Length: 464
Ligand code: NAP
Image (tube, rainbow, N blue to C red):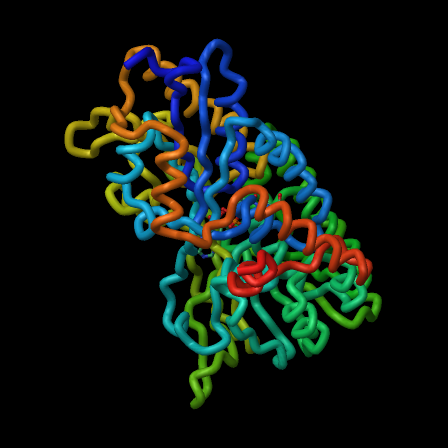
């Protein structure tokens, strides 16, 4: 066989997971000079773009325009999309090894972390990630029910996901109607009786994970006043010191201190951002539904490495909330046959090369990028350099001849396999057709798009 990476024998790469990282990895691969590379991007959903479609808040349309760059990558003649093809059930690692020289996993972090407090399993206690997937029309979550008939909700955590959830709960019907939020979610939120939303941070304002533009947006909502307790944004000496070399955190505290001076203006809703409090227990009624949350006041202490951590005091408070969203981070899910670091929730890897945990040596031909490589941190753009690091390792290994040795390294062989296993898979052309229909339906209603939210609807729209 001729050298791999030539016109006669292109380097065949499978990328599993069509979120931003998958597209960035494909883009970096296509930019390689002097090597002919074919990329097949697989996703278990019929639709591409991962969290840009299923995670980014519907009122953040500008962020979603990043998909234009992904469209350009997909237009490359050596790019193929295999949507609605699930790794582990429709195709196995063994199948991929037979068809590709390299396999890159960019599956993100598909589940959430739990709080580990009593009452977490009660009715009306949910993972924020599920609520996000629901309002964004993710087919796996569109049938979830969220009881918005209560008056008070708590969001545990002060990261950007918590901010998204709190903001969506506070948006007015008119604001939501101008977005691409799933139609059933728009309807449910229009009927929402929620009046107060609490966001709960276990540490202080200087340690809050949300970013400043997102925080500012919370202070500009037409339908909700922001409330911050002055005593909770006064800094302790350790936090004060930490701000000296952290301009962004200093600005964050400044914004919060300005919020603390504001008076309520009588908007229909109120968003209360609390600091230095942790849930101890979610309390239920006889029907097993959330009715309150017991929270404990924390103080900060410095660990040996200087990080400020929360420690419970003996001050307890009961917050009367009927709905709870835990928003304390996403978590990676293991993939069949791929070494997984359970504690860190990522694929065992070194700079993107998958590592065998026993031998600590790279597993030839297998790679990881994005959240499944480094954990659920950073914004969409963070995945571009992350994917590049992995692609550089792939190119180094190719130069050393350290690839898989597929027996059927032809694009047509994969197409045949997928057609057998998943006859109704979704190609890039199919997706473009769905995209056009969604955008067209949205246009008629003055919205950016109206999403298909079930696989059946998508298949029907493709005439299947
Ligand atoms: P995150 O930024 O890691 O925030 C997690 C939050 O949960 C932190 O406030 C953390 O507090 C808190 N937390 C963790 N364990 C807790 C516990 N046991 N009890 C109470 N609080 C706890 O995660 P995320 O909000 O899920 O976001 C994931 C990534 O996506 C982030 O990088 C985020 O910036 C990004 N994102 C960006 C946007 C945007 O750009 N608009 C939107 C959504 C998400 P500690 O700091 O004390 O651990």
